[in-house]
Length: 137
Image 1 (cartoon, one colour):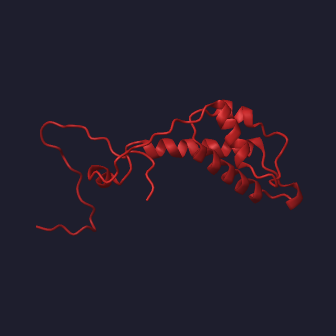
Image 2: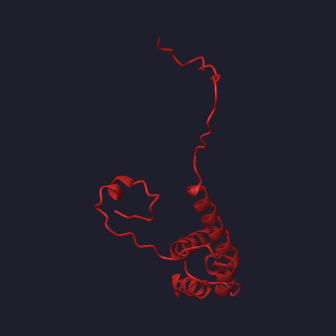
Image 3: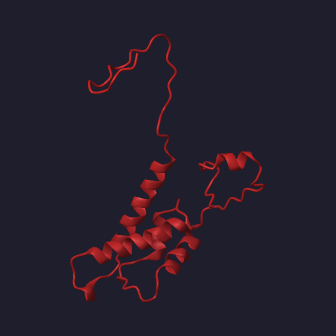
């Protein structure tokens, strides 16, 4: 079982004291991010000369190593899907930027609350039920 953070859906395990420690890792700094970008790209991967790991590390600062790994994978898939001869397919800077941008957006959506509860005073008028819904009395 994996625990990513304390907002995990496994709160019962946290409350039951089965987990005694919580270890938090800080996000990597710019230098570490550049090294992670480089480490995640296999040597045999066709990589465009436009790829600049230092620039990626500067441009995207609130990302984890997991985010970088996923971005590289998504960039490879995007490059492979391009309508080009196999010998011309390469992962470019734009593939990596698009992939990490999508991951950052997905991370933001995952941390947003699905519902907002607002206290209301007095009676609240509910909408009528759909016509095909049977009403139990």
